[in-house]
Length: 348
Image (cartoon, rainbow, N blue to C red; front, side, top):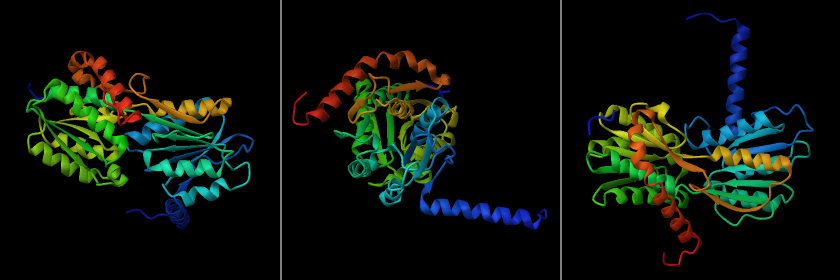
Protein backbone atom coordinates (compact mmCIF):
# COMPACT_ATOMS: atom_id res chain seq x y z
CA UNK A 1 0.00 0.00 0.00
CA UNK A 2 1.40 3.38 -0.96
CA UNK A 3 1.24 6.36 1.35
CA UNK A 4 -2.40 6.49 2.34
CA UNK A 5 -3.04 9.04 0.82
CA UNK A 6 4.85 48.69 20.51
CA UNK A 7 2.04 50.90 20.83
CA UNK A 8 1.01 53.04 23.83
CA UNK A 9 -2.36 52.32 25.42
CA UNK A 10 -4.47 54.72 27.49
CA UNK A 11 -4.37 54.17 31.23
CA UNK A 12 -8.06 53.16 31.26
CA UNK A 13 -7.39 50.36 28.78
CA UNK A 14 -4.54 49.05 30.91
CA UNK A 15 -6.80 48.99 33.96
CA UNK A 16 -9.48 47.11 32.05
CA UNK A 17 -6.97 44.51 30.88
CA UNK A 18 -5.63 44.00 34.41
CA UNK A 19 -9.12 43.62 35.87
CA UNK A 20 -10.12 41.17 33.16
CA UNK A 21 -7.02 39.07 33.75
CA UNK A 22 -7.68 39.03 37.48
CA UNK A 23 -11.19 37.75 36.87
CA UNK A 24 -9.87 34.91 34.75
CA UNK A 25 -7.35 33.92 37.41
CA UNK A 26 -10.04 34.02 40.10
CA UNK A 27 -12.30 31.79 38.04
CA UNK A 28 -9.54 29.23 37.60
CA UNK A 29 -8.68 29.28 41.29
CA UNK A 30 -12.21 28.59 42.48
CA UNK A 31 -12.64 25.95 39.78
CA UNK A 32 -16.27 26.76 39.01
CA UNK A 33 -17.02 28.95 36.02
CA UNK A 34 -20.61 30.01 35.32
CA UNK A 35 -21.02 30.14 31.56
CA UNK A 36 -24.52 31.58 31.64
CA UNK A 37 -25.42 34.51 33.87
CA UNK A 38 -28.84 33.78 35.38
CA UNK A 39 -31.18 36.52 34.23
CA UNK A 40 -34.54 34.72 34.44
CA UNK A 41 -34.80 33.16 37.92
CA UNK A 42 -38.01 31.34 37.04
CA UNK A 43 -36.22 29.09 34.55
CA UNK A 44 -34.88 25.70 35.71
CA UNK A 45 -31.21 25.57 36.66
CA UNK A 46 -28.93 22.78 35.38
CA UNK A 47 -25.35 22.19 36.49
CA UNK A 48 -22.91 20.71 33.97
CA UNK A 49 -19.78 19.12 35.48
CA UNK A 50 -16.77 17.80 33.61
CA UNK A 51 -13.17 17.01 34.46
CA UNK A 52 -11.07 18.87 31.91
CA UNK A 53 -11.40 22.12 30.02
CA UNK A 54 -13.27 22.22 26.76
CA UNK A 55 -11.54 22.33 23.39
CA UNK A 56 -10.12 18.85 23.78
CA UNK A 57 -11.42 18.07 20.27
CA UNK A 58 -12.72 14.82 21.70
CA UNK A 59 -14.86 13.66 24.63
CA UNK A 60 -15.56 16.91 26.50
CA UNK A 61 -16.32 18.85 23.34
CA UNK A 62 -18.74 16.15 22.23
CA UNK A 63 -20.60 16.34 25.54
CA UNK A 64 -20.67 20.13 25.39
CA UNK A 65 -22.28 20.05 21.95
CA UNK A 66 -25.22 18.28 23.55
CA UNK A 67 -25.58 21.10 26.08
CA UNK A 68 -25.44 23.76 23.36
CA UNK A 69 -28.05 21.94 21.28
CA UNK A 70 -30.33 21.69 24.31
CA UNK A 71 -29.91 25.42 25.03
CA UNK A 72 -31.02 26.17 21.48
CA UNK A 73 -34.21 24.11 21.84
CA UNK A 74 -35.17 24.53 25.50
CA UNK A 75 -35.39 27.32 28.08
CA UNK A 76 -33.21 26.73 31.13
CA UNK A 77 -30.26 28.28 32.91
CA UNK A 78 -26.93 26.52 33.28
CA UNK A 79 -23.73 26.71 35.24
CA UNK A 80 -20.61 24.89 34.18
CA UNK A 81 -17.99 23.38 36.48
CA UNK A 82 -14.59 22.08 35.43
CA UNK A 83 -13.36 20.39 38.60
CA UNK A 84 -13.42 16.97 40.23
CA UNK A 85 -13.56 18.61 43.67
CA UNK A 86 -16.70 17.64 45.58
CA UNK A 87 -16.22 20.54 48.00
CA UNK A 88 -16.67 22.99 45.13
CA UNK A 89 -20.09 21.66 44.23
CA UNK A 90 -21.47 20.97 47.69
CA UNK A 91 -21.90 24.65 48.72
CA UNK A 92 -23.48 25.40 45.35
CA UNK A 93 -26.13 22.73 45.92
CA UNK A 94 -26.81 24.18 49.36
CA UNK A 95 -27.73 27.60 47.97
CA UNK A 96 -31.37 28.66 48.17
CA UNK A 97 -33.69 28.66 45.18
CA UNK A 98 -33.62 29.76 42.42
CA UNK A 99 -29.85 29.20 42.14
CA UNK A 100 -30.09 25.58 43.25
CA UNK A 101 -30.19 23.15 40.32
CA UNK A 102 -32.86 20.58 39.64
CA UNK A 103 -30.47 18.54 37.50
CA UNK A 104 -26.74 17.92 37.76
CA UNK A 105 -24.96 16.31 34.79
CA UNK A 106 -21.58 14.77 35.55
CA UNK A 107 -19.53 13.70 32.53
CA UNK A 108 -16.81 11.09 32.91
CA UNK A 109 -15.93 7.99 34.89
CA UNK A 110 -13.88 9.88 37.51
CA UNK A 111 -17.11 11.35 38.88
CA UNK A 112 -18.63 8.00 39.90
CA UNK A 113 -18.19 8.58 43.64
CA UNK A 114 -19.11 12.26 43.39
CA UNK A 115 -22.34 11.50 41.56
CA UNK A 116 -23.44 8.99 44.18
CA UNK A 117 -22.72 11.44 47.00
CA UNK A 118 -24.56 14.26 45.26
CA UNK A 119 -27.58 12.04 44.74
CA UNK A 120 -27.51 10.71 48.31
CA UNK A 121 -27.16 14.13 49.92
CA UNK A 122 -29.67 15.88 47.64
CA UNK A 123 -32.63 13.55 47.11
CA UNK A 124 -34.64 16.35 45.47
CA UNK A 125 -32.00 16.83 42.74
CA UNK A 126 -31.71 14.56 39.70
CA UNK A 127 -28.22 13.43 38.73
CA UNK A 128 -27.32 12.24 35.23
CA UNK A 129 -24.05 10.33 35.58
CA UNK A 130 -22.53 9.74 32.15
CA UNK A 131 -20.03 6.95 31.59
CA UNK A 132 -20.34 5.89 35.20
CA UNK A 133 -21.47 2.25 35.39
CA UNK A 134 -23.67 1.10 38.23
CA UNK A 135 -27.27 0.53 39.22
CA UNK A 136 -28.08 4.21 39.74
CA UNK A 137 -30.67 5.18 42.33
CA UNK A 138 -34.08 6.77 42.64
CA UNK A 139 -32.70 10.20 41.71
CA UNK A 140 -29.61 9.19 39.73
CA UNK A 141 -29.52 7.93 36.18
CA UNK A 142 -26.33 6.01 35.48
CA UNK A 143 -25.65 6.06 31.73
CA UNK A 144 -22.74 4.06 30.39
CA UNK A 145 -21.72 4.22 26.74
CA UNK A 146 -19.90 1.06 25.71
CA UNK A 147 -17.30 1.56 22.96
CA UNK A 148 -16.31 -2.06 22.47
CA UNK A 149 -18.03 -2.45 19.10
CA UNK A 150 -16.74 0.80 17.60
CA UNK A 151 -13.25 -0.03 18.86
CA UNK A 152 -13.56 -3.45 17.25
CA UNK A 153 -14.17 -1.71 13.92
CA UNK A 154 -11.23 0.61 14.63
CA UNK A 155 -9.12 -2.53 14.98
CA UNK A 156 -10.45 -3.87 11.69
CA UNK A 157 -9.56 -0.57 10.02
CA UNK A 158 -6.06 -0.55 11.51
CA UNK A 159 -5.42 -4.13 10.44
CA UNK A 160 -6.73 -3.41 6.95
CA UNK A 161 -4.61 -0.27 6.53
CA UNK A 162 -1.28 -1.38 8.00
CA UNK A 163 1.63 -2.06 5.68
CA UNK A 164 4.01 -3.11 8.45
CA UNK A 165 1.76 -5.57 10.27
CA UNK A 166 2.39 -3.51 13.39
CA UNK A 167 -0.27 -1.22 14.85
CA UNK A 168 -0.72 0.49 18.20
CA UNK A 169 -3.11 1.90 20.76
CA UNK A 170 -2.40 4.79 23.14
CA UNK A 171 -4.84 5.29 26.02
CA UNK A 172 -5.10 8.19 28.45
CA UNK A 173 -4.87 6.02 31.56
CA UNK A 174 -6.02 2.74 33.05
CA UNK A 175 -9.74 2.44 33.78
CA UNK A 176 -12.56 -0.06 33.41
CA UNK A 177 -14.15 2.23 30.85
CA UNK A 178 -11.06 2.38 28.64
CA UNK A 179 -10.56 -1.35 28.96
CA UNK A 180 -13.52 -1.78 26.63
CA UNK A 181 -11.75 0.35 24.02
CA UNK A 182 -8.54 -1.63 24.39
CA UNK A 183 -10.06 -5.08 24.28
CA UNK A 184 -12.41 -4.23 21.44
CA UNK A 185 -9.55 -2.85 19.36
CA UNK A 186 -7.42 -5.93 19.94
CA UNK A 187 -10.23 -8.27 18.99
CA UNK A 188 -10.88 -6.36 15.79
CA UNK A 189 -7.20 -6.36 14.81
CA UNK A 190 -6.79 -10.07 15.45
CA UNK A 191 -10.00 -10.90 13.59
CA UNK A 192 -8.24 -9.70 10.45
CA UNK A 193 -4.79 -11.05 11.17
CA UNK A 194 -3.78 -12.75 14.45
CA UNK A 195 -0.11 -12.27 13.54
CA UNK A 196 -0.25 -8.46 13.68
CA UNK A 197 1.79 -6.94 16.51
CA UNK A 198 -0.12 -4.44 18.66
CA UNK A 199 1.88 -1.91 20.71
CA UNK A 200 0.02 -0.68 23.80
CA UNK A 201 0.86 2.31 26.00
CA UNK A 202 -0.83 4.62 28.56
CA UNK A 203 -0.10 8.35 28.61
CA UNK A 204 -0.19 8.39 32.43
CA UNK A 205 -0.43 5.51 34.87
CA UNK A 206 -3.67 5.63 36.85
CA UNK A 207 -4.21 9.37 36.40
CA UNK A 208 -6.90 11.25 34.45
CA UNK A 209 -4.18 13.80 33.63
CA UNK A 210 -3.29 11.36 30.90
CA UNK A 211 -6.12 12.85 28.89
CA UNK A 212 -4.50 16.31 28.96
CA UNK A 213 -0.87 15.64 28.07
CA UNK A 214 -0.35 15.93 24.29
CA UNK A 215 3.44 16.21 24.70
CA UNK A 216 3.72 12.89 26.52
CA UNK A 217 1.34 11.21 24.08
CA UNK A 218 3.35 12.61 21.19
CA UNK A 219 6.57 11.20 22.64
CA UNK A 220 4.98 7.77 22.93
CA UNK A 221 3.62 7.96 19.40
CA UNK A 222 6.99 9.06 18.02
CA UNK A 223 8.59 5.99 19.55
CA UNK A 224 5.92 3.72 18.13
CA UNK A 225 6.08 5.23 14.66
CA UNK A 226 9.88 5.06 14.70
CA UNK A 227 9.68 1.40 15.68
CA UNK A 228 7.55 0.41 12.72
CA UNK A 229 4.00 0.95 13.94
CA UNK A 230 2.10 2.65 11.15
CA UNK A 231 -1.45 3.03 12.56
CA UNK A 232 -2.24 4.17 16.12
CA UNK A 233 -5.67 4.23 17.78
CA UNK A 234 -5.51 7.29 20.06
CA UNK A 235 -7.93 6.84 22.98
CA UNK A 236 -6.67 9.78 25.00
CA UNK A 237 -8.86 12.87 24.73
CA UNK A 238 -6.82 16.05 24.25
CA UNK A 239 -3.63 13.99 24.42
CA UNK A 240 -4.62 12.46 21.12
CA UNK A 241 -3.69 15.71 19.38
CA UNK A 242 -0.09 14.88 20.22
CA UNK A 243 -0.42 11.59 18.39
CA UNK A 244 -1.90 13.32 15.36
CA UNK A 245 0.96 15.84 15.40
CA UNK A 246 3.51 13.05 15.35
CA UNK A 247 1.77 11.24 12.52
CA UNK A 248 2.19 14.39 10.44
CA UNK A 249 5.93 14.29 11.13
CA UNK A 250 6.29 10.66 10.07
CA UNK A 251 5.36 9.96 6.44
CA UNK A 252 3.33 6.82 6.01
CA UNK A 253 2.03 6.89 9.60
CA UNK A 254 -1.63 7.29 10.52
CA UNK A 255 -4.12 7.75 13.37
CA UNK A 256 -7.60 6.55 14.24
CA UNK A 257 -9.31 9.19 16.36
CA UNK A 258 -11.85 8.80 19.12
CA UNK A 259 -15.12 10.27 20.51
CA UNK A 260 -15.62 12.91 17.79
CA UNK A 261 -14.74 13.01 14.11
CA UNK A 262 -11.12 14.15 14.28
CA UNK A 263 -10.54 14.35 10.54
CA UNK A 264 -10.21 18.19 10.64
CA UNK A 265 -7.25 17.84 13.01
CA UNK A 266 -5.29 15.81 10.45
CA UNK A 267 -6.95 15.48 7.06
CA UNK A 268 -3.91 13.69 5.66
CA UNK A 269 -3.24 11.31 8.57
CA UNK A 270 -6.56 10.55 10.32
CA UNK A 271 -8.05 7.44 8.73
CA UNK A 272 -11.30 7.62 10.70
CA UNK A 273 -12.69 8.05 14.19
CA UNK A 274 -14.54 5.81 16.63
CA UNK A 275 -17.20 8.31 17.64
CA UNK A 276 -19.09 8.32 20.92
CA UNK A 277 -22.38 10.23 20.99
CA UNK A 278 -22.12 11.77 24.46
CA UNK A 279 -23.94 14.77 23.00
CA UNK A 280 -27.06 12.66 22.49
CA UNK A 281 -27.01 11.50 26.12
CA UNK A 282 -26.68 15.08 27.38
CA UNK A 283 -29.42 16.37 25.09
CA UNK A 284 -31.90 13.57 25.79
CA UNK A 285 -31.22 13.76 29.53
CA UNK A 286 -32.02 17.47 29.57
CA UNK A 287 -35.08 16.91 27.40
CA UNK A 288 -36.43 14.26 29.76
CA UNK A 289 -35.72 16.45 32.78
CA UNK A 290 -37.55 19.38 31.21
CA UNK A 291 -40.45 17.09 30.33
CA UNK A 292 -40.55 15.63 33.84
CA UNK A 293 -39.82 12.11 32.60
CA UNK A 294 -36.18 11.67 33.69
CA UNK A 295 -35.99 8.77 36.11
CA UNK A 296 -33.28 7.06 38.09
CA UNK A 297 -31.75 3.70 37.28
CA UNK A 298 -29.19 2.34 34.87
CA UNK A 299 -28.77 2.56 31.10
CA UNK A 300 -26.10 0.85 29.03
CA UNK A 301 -25.89 1.66 25.33
CA UNK A 302 -23.41 1.24 22.52
CA UNK A 303 -23.12 0.20 18.92
CA UNK A 304 -26.56 -1.38 18.59
CA UNK A 305 -28.27 1.66 20.07
CA UNK A 306 -26.51 4.09 17.70
CA UNK A 307 -24.45 5.64 20.50
CA UNK A 308 -21.12 4.66 18.96
CA UNK A 309 -19.77 3.99 15.49
CA UNK A 310 -16.86 4.41 13.13
CA UNK A 311 -16.77 7.38 10.74
CA UNK A 312 -14.27 7.65 7.93
CA UNK A 313 -12.12 10.48 6.67
CA UNK A 314 -13.47 10.92 3.11
CA UNK A 315 -9.88 10.73 1.86
CA UNK A 316 -9.74 7.13 3.04
CA UNK A 317 -13.30 6.08 2.30
CA UNK A 318 -11.96 3.21 0.19
CA UNK A 319 -11.60 1.26 3.44
CA UNK A 320 -15.24 1.70 4.36
CA UNK A 321 -16.81 -1.17 2.37
CA UNK A 322 -14.39 -3.75 3.74
CA UNK A 323 -14.72 -2.52 7.33
CA UNK A 324 -18.53 -2.39 7.06
CA UNK A 325 -18.57 -6.12 6.38
CA UNK A 326 -17.43 -6.61 9.98
CA UNK A 327 -20.25 -4.64 11.61
CA UNK A 328 -22.20 -7.76 12.56
CA UNK A 329 -19.09 -9.25 14.11
CA UNK A 330 -18.58 -6.00 16.04
CA UNK A 331 -22.14 -6.22 17.38
CA UNK A 332 -21.64 -9.82 18.46
CA UNK A 333 -18.32 -9.01 20.10
CA UNK A 334 -19.84 -6.10 22.03
CA UNK A 335 -22.76 -8.26 23.14
CA UNK A 336 -20.34 -10.86 24.53
CA UNK A 337 -18.34 -8.15 26.27
CA UNK A 338 -21.44 -6.67 27.89
CA UNK A 339 -22.63 -10.11 28.96
CA UNK A 340 -19.25 -10.92 30.49
CA UNK A 341 -19.42 -7.76 32.58
CA UNK A 342 -22.93 -8.50 33.77
CA UNK A 343 -22.04 -12.12 34.59
CA UNK A 344 -18.26 -12.14 35.22
CA UNK A 345 -18.14 -15.79 36.35
CA UNK A 346 -20.03 -17.17 33.37
CA UNK A 347 -18.39 -18.83 30.39
CA UNK A 348 -19.29 -17.42 26.95
